[in-house]
Amino acid sequence: MNIGILVSGRGSNMAAILDAIQSGDLNVNVSLVLSNNPQSPALRRAARENIPTKVVNHRDYGKDREAFEAALDAALRSEGVDCVVLAGFMRVLTPFFVRRWKERLINIHPSLLPAFRGLHAQRQALEAGVKLAGCTVHFVDEGTDTGPIIAQSAVPVLDTDSEDTLSARILEEEHKLLPLVLHWLAGGRISIENDRVRIARI
Ligand code: GRF
Image (cartoon, rainbow, N blue to C red; front, side, top):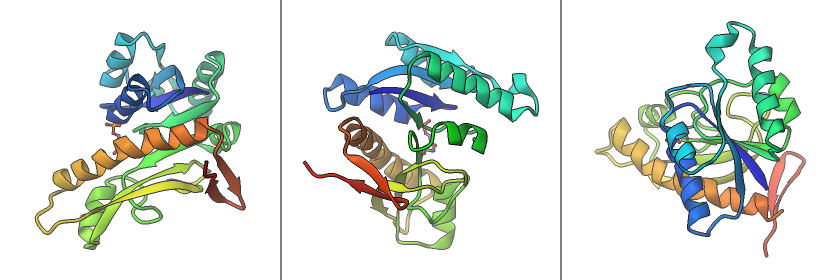
């Protein structure tokens, strides 16, 4: 399976995927790391490992989201990508892109969806006073942080938590969950029936 990883920032989830490949836990080929942000540190790590990288800067497209997304789509297709992973990609993708990658586009979000969609999910969890937080990997549909849920991992929220400490505890789980879901996908074990994800046992 050829994957394309879309990043905007630090890229620790991308790094977790590359680490899992290197350690033999994950058998996928990273065909492209694509960023809208030329400064993303993720681009440097990918380039160090000779993974093709590309910047498609949204600023170059002004308000023309479709042209921006068409450029993303073209880059992914030209590298033969089968499945797209949003790993901290900070642009909302419109139906134009989402429809083209239907059921081949996944996202990781730092909350137990459907709770706390959107930005600052960890802060939202603290403000709501929940006792469990976590992360979700899901297929992307046309909504924001909606779409069929593939897997989730929960962590406790401690009385002493700040946004930073909670985010760090969730991030540790993200780094395990995302490679695991990719392992299932590459193994052909994930199917969607009536918007519910089934994971075949082996
Ligand atoms: C993660 O918390 C992820 O869940 C969210 O954005 C953050 C990206 O972090 N979508 P990183 O760039 O992978 O370190």
